[in-house]
Length: 334
Ligand code: CP
Ligand code: NVA
Image 1 (cartoon, protein in one colour):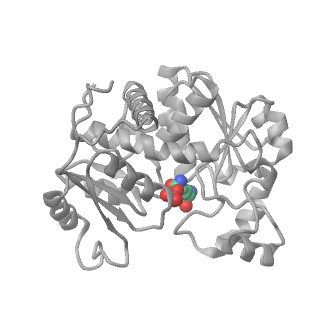
Image 2 (image 1 turned 30 degrees about the vertical axis):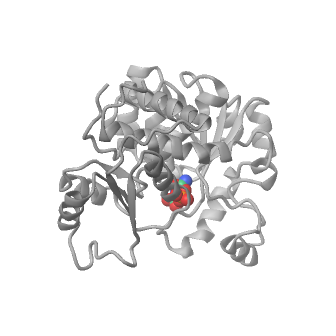
Image 3 (image 1 turned 60 degrees about the vertical axis):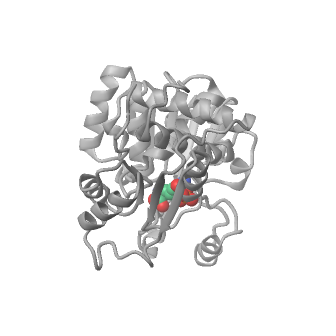
């Protein structure tokens, strides 16, 4: 397996075999980290981290993973970079590629990270766009494999806004890896028909299935994984909260959903999550709409079935694998 020099922009660009290779590599690197074995083979290299939207996990995962691999990091946030305002995406990419060995980019439209990659001679890693969140997928798939012991045949139900980055990416990952993907939401939030058609093609090859349903009880029946995400994503106007709450509240992940899914089902969320009143936004929503929990109840979030913090940790191990594999030869590890 040779992924050296490749960008990591969406899982559409990766075969099932390549995705599984990255998971295997992540598992090896995770094991080494736990044992305290150093993997700082990229000493002397540097990466840039561009964040046009905020982040806790992705930024920290890239920084820690890069440092573990021996690399230096430079963080650029929208308030200090000139990207798109005083300098084009193309010129910025060309400049940074001359200084760095790899570049992470979190931003708005997928076309921007694609443009960035086109003008960068070093690998570009998508740290989230409106359309896709591919590094999150590797963490999620590694977590599912660790918890359930398999990926093929797993029924994963995504509840909420299934047209955005998380829903899209999960549908792609599941259809490539032979899993049963269910988007369980109101039909206004079903994924784009062209993307569904593309994933149906992947599914034919892998044995996956794709189901879109508005029926909560039918959709979540016997699920292995119940997955949700915030109802309003970064960059969306605050005004949409009202309609989102109205339309997506029936698709909240609560005890009834988890019971219907089955006793061995796990709960996943990319995080951050609104499950209590310990956030500023959570309290504002409570004052306006009277709800104390949104996409997931605190009961489910805090339950033994919830694997969200292991999932979060796996962001670091999997991002390390992506960087390691696209920057050099990893045959010493897998
Ligand atoms: N899941 C995720 O991408 O989290 P951050 O926004 O904190 O990076
Ligand atoms: N859909 C969310 C995912 C956050 C990791 C957002 O884009 O804000």
